[in-house]
Image (cartoon, rainbow over all chains, first blue to last red; front, side, top):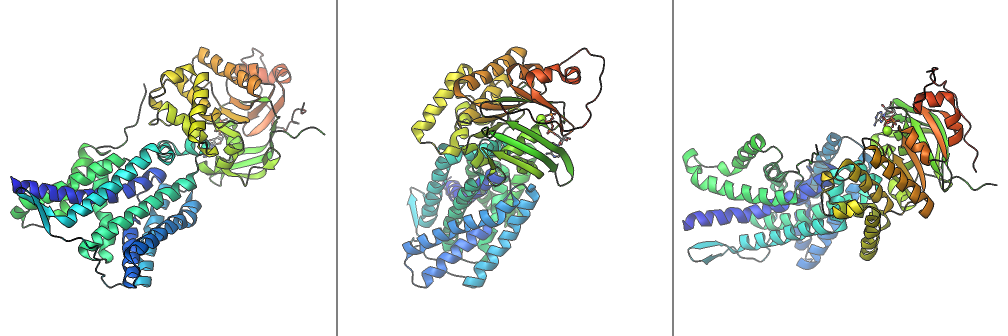
Length: 293
Length: 266
Ligand SMILES: Nc1ncnc2c1ncn2[C@@H]1O[C@H](COP(=O)(O)OP(=O)(O)OP(=O)(O)O)[C@@H](O)[C@H]1O
Ligand SMILES: [Mg+2]
């Protein structure tokens, strides 16, 4: 039983991280109806920028501030150079633009900072801490707590502020949003800035685990099942979807994995997502359309 | 020298998707403090005309390819919808377009965002609009998607009023509403005009209702203005009466396409 709990908790802790990454996608999806393929590249870009400047002797806190500034600058640049010219283009063009952006960012990050793997030490040990018979890694706990606060903060921000109301309005009816005078450009800069912060935090937490390297940009592949399960346009869905994916992939790995020679963790979320597509295509929290009769 | 009109469209031509021509040289004006009716059948170009004025055409892949639109004497071209709302030009879209998942209060709030009000200003503005619409007040925390058609039309208008407009472009407010609710809408338009000095450009297929409140009117057909003048003039035109006012005349002739001189600014 305690082993089950340990696996479950480990899965949920990983799941919080997925939730955090998924929220970056959800914000952009709500604001412009597009799956932002560049989110993974932003994670890589943020992490690589951060380690590269710390390696040059910049203190941790300052490096954090500089990288944050870089991510906000990136958000504004994306709004100006990519989104604004494509303002009324069909969603497919926008999606392709984010695909292009992903390659530009990956290329840029690796041209400037090189392609070698960088170690990243956040100064948090991986030692297990336990309560009773269950023990979890200190680092995982720290990562999950950080991700959870970011998730909570963003959730609150977009629930109760004007930007949040504007974001939901745009997601509901973009034409009406323009007609009432909602400033789409500002909103885009805000959501891309928020996605940048998510990318930075995700990049640091994952980077500290697996090293800062190209594979960080593959988190985009992890987010897809989370979004399908939770619903593309719901922050609550991203949170729930992340936890479901995190918990179920670890449990499946441990309990089903041995029967099929392991390696389940990488593809199990997709099978789960496929199941959800069949049963609940809008996702757990996907916006139900309100129909009056 | 007379004061310039609040809104002036000068021989504008509009094309959608780079090929579909929707307006062919529309000229009209809305004087400050006027209520102007824009009549016409389905597809005549009423909505397109309003969107050309409010800067919403771009969002529909439409473009003013010739002529000019000016609001308060300056061309709207460079201003964009957000700036126009700030300056007092607000459009209420055909079919209401409330935000279905937002509450009534949140819907109203969005209308004020462009002018960046303080929190207390925003609260007061919402209260003031709710005073005008008692039924909306009762349902202030309901999702707009659950309101009746009449309530949604009120909400759409209330959301525009909260921006403190000087000119409201109202697109088919009577669409799909019971006669009593239509009457209520138009009474409200008249009240806003009389008490707040608000101007209106009113696109309508319900000509009788629109002409009852308007000072001047234009008739659009196939993207052209085929008649324009004071309400009395328009009512007197036999052809207009036949086509749009439910007249009983036998001559169901189509308008000949020709441009009309705009009505004299009074
Ligand atoms: N987004 C669009 N893309 C392409 N063509 C359009 C678009 N919107 C309108 N049109 C065309 O422009 C013409 C004028 O349409 P518009 O909507 O302005 O008419 P309307 O007078 O408002 O009609 P209704 O009374 O039905 O609302 C029509 O031929 C229509 O098909
Ligand atoms: Mg119309």
